Length: 113
Image 1 (spheres, rainbow, N blue to C red):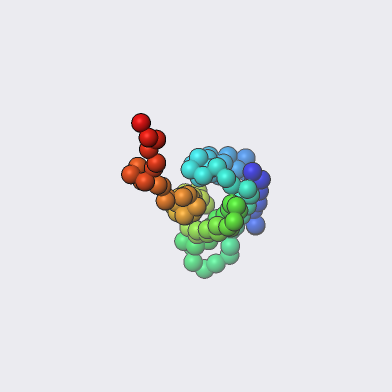
Image 2 (image 1 turned 90 degrees about the horizontal axis):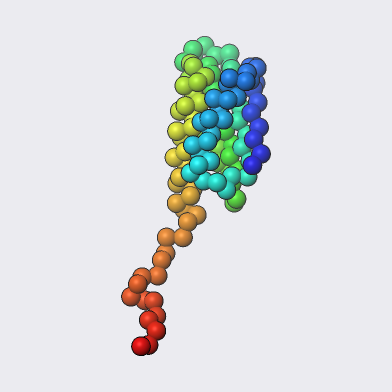
């Protein structure tokens, strides 16, 4: 799994990097077939103070890219909300990928006694 954490108009501190890694553990625990993760943390100059800090993730799994973004006035809160959204989307993707069509017990051939 390749992981890239970068900042735009922001220096990614070791504490911020560690916080993102601990939050990503929850997502990778649910679904371990992740190929590539790109995390971008941004501080924008906007008049709306509550939307200034933005976090976005592009998660590449086999056959699909999952993109999630979240804005908040606090970067840590934006990361929390982002990981909640990402976790829901990864669980939904995992449900779609899994084969839910099991053969019933009645259809299995029983050997002749």
